[in-house]
Amino acid sequence: MQQIKSYLDQIATISQLDWDFFMSKLQRRVIKKKAIFLKINAIENHISFIETGVVRLFIPKENPEKEITFGFSFKDQFISAYDSFLTQKPSAYQLQALTETTILSITYNDLQAVYNNTQIGNLIGRLTAERLFLIKSKREQNLLNLTAEERYTKLFKERPELIKVIPLKYISSYIGVTPQALSRIRRRL
Image (cartoon, rainbow, N blue to C red; front, side, top):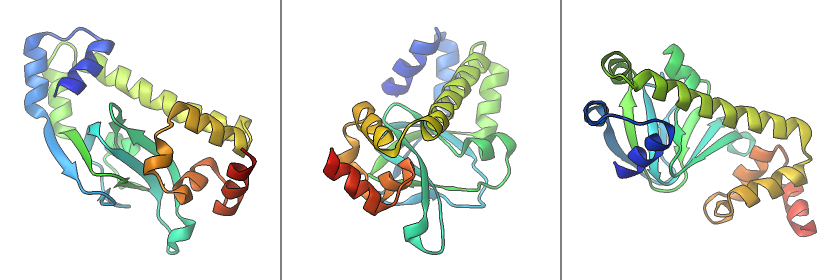
């Protein structure tokens, strides 16, 4: 619980009463390596904070080689099929733990209670949503403005631990190239 407290303390000062109420709504879950913990067409009912591990966001296909990986989340980040969470409509993608992953989760209804019963809840919710939006916006800009080689290089400058835990087929999908093209990029570098 200390990790999420440290993260939220960077955003705002939280009273002990608000923190205790928020903490009472959190549930620790351990997701096994490779487990899909939100399936396509399921409604996302949690927003979670990653204590340990790596999560992949992807669109499944009949042929697993054609899956589209469009996001990763890491330790000390929030993870959710956020659009499904906000609208309470079925998700168009899945969430998968790439490593054993420990998360602290809050349900949609419990988060609404935090918003309604604490002084700081709405501010934390808004600032967290803004951070999720900025991550998404940065990814879209990178896809539009950078070459595949630049996207690959930037990814590993920002997250050097990726090479150890994420299969190259997911990385190639994430940067928008085939596995063969990624092999050529890696040889050039």
